Length: 163
Image: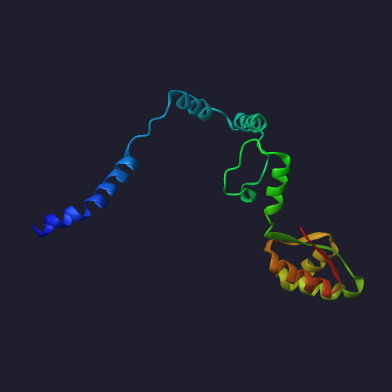
C-alpha cells in the first residue's frame, strides 16, 4: 500500500517524463515538399552547393558575416541598414593580431632578442623576422595580452599595430 501511495504522489512527474520521452522518440513528420528539397540538395556537388548558398544569400538579403562574429539571437531577414551598423558596432572584437610595422634601427638588437624570446625562434630566424617587418608577430591574442605586448615592444622602439 505504501508503494502505491508513492506512485500516486509522483504520478504527474512520471507522466511528464513519459510524455517527454515519447515526444523525443516519435518519428518526425516532414512535408513532402521539404523532403524533395533535401533530396535535391543532397545530390548537388560542392560547386553547385556554393552557388546555391550565394543565390540564397542574394535572394534573402543575408550579409556575409563570419560565424564567430554572428550574434546568437536571430535577426530579421530584412533589417534596415542602420540597424545592421548598430549590431556590428555592438559586437566588440576580442581577439587581435599583433603586427610589427617597423622598428628603430638603434634598438634592432633589443627587438630581435624580444622576438626571439616571444616566438621561440633561433637568433638567425628572429633577425630575419624583424628585418622582414611589417609582419604579424602573433595571431588571435586576447585584447589585454596584445596591448601588454604592444606596450613592451613600443618601449623597445618598435612600431606595433593591433589588427
